[in-house]
Length: 136
Image: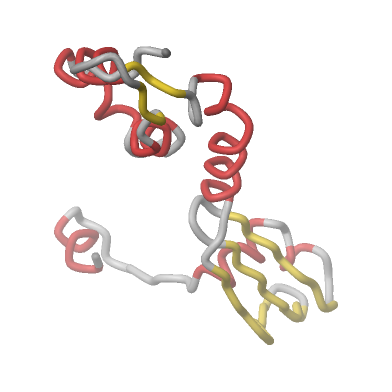
């Protein structure tokens, strides 16, 4: 990444670790001296950083992240509360024969996953989903 910035004409290239950047972004270096906590809930992780500020300087005392974030919460809510309204758990008519089967979960998992949704907007996928999910 440094090489890219230099190639673009920058001469002084420095990087800031994410926990320090999050504390600085919240104004930690502008509030005088003290100890604080920054909670950064991202798309896939939640990071927690304890810092101490001394005037305009910052010291990260502890940092830990867990692999659950906003995207995970959104997906869980969507699967549990929205997808049943769209047919998750319903019985669908078998294409061949007169029986019925439970709607495939994969369709609803894809619809609840934000990074997959754009790939569902093709004519082929619309036809496939429409043919597969015919409520009984």
